[in-house]
Length: 124
Image (cartoon, rainbow, N blue to C red; front, side, top):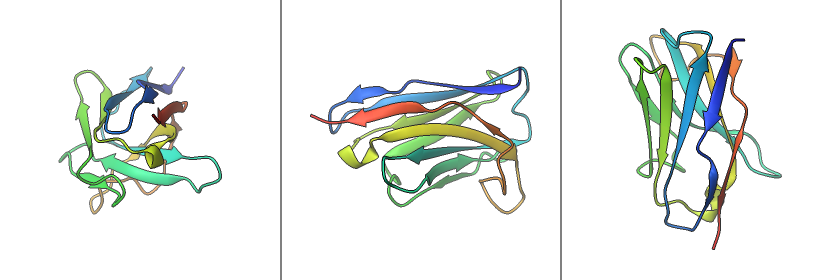
């Protein structure tokens, strides 16, 4: 079954770190750009980061720039989101999603595949 499998969420105190993983199952991430999208209760869905395939270019939203790092290991068919200096406002369900990479953006125009969400809770 073609799917993206997300892991690595959990609870952490403010200032802490977590690493999320997004692994492809039954297909390859070659030529797919991958995005991390989060949704907090009562808030709109927010795209926080993307990474292209060919050049590995990256995008970060202003809310996470300087704190989060996206990376990919194409040999392992996996994309990671390293989250540092976490804040309570980072609390959300985090999803990864994949779509065909584009020439002019780190993010795909549309997502073909979605992983299940993982809860990230930042609180003291």
